[in-house]
Image (cartoon, rainbow, N blue to C red; front, top):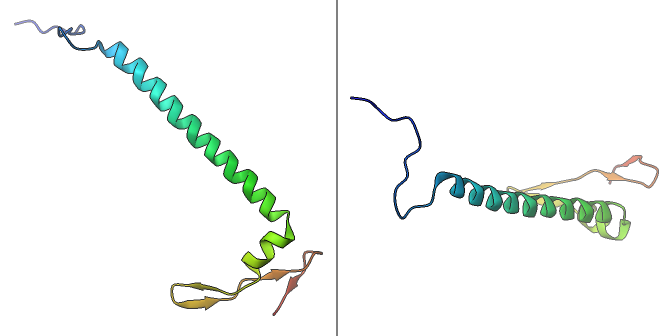
Length: 84
């Protein structure tokens, strides 16, 4: 008995090459959306980090994490750490 190692073609189904092309196009679109989202997130983070009026309310107040109050470090414009 001989086994065939070539591609099988089933009538009424897409060939595997056609499925591979469609899957590749879909995955490229997914990765492009993910990359765009990551770039937008980075730009927003840079904008917030460079605007004191936006980052001081975020980092200037104590945060409640897991039921405990955590005191985040504060820095003056010269980069020195301030103790509050």
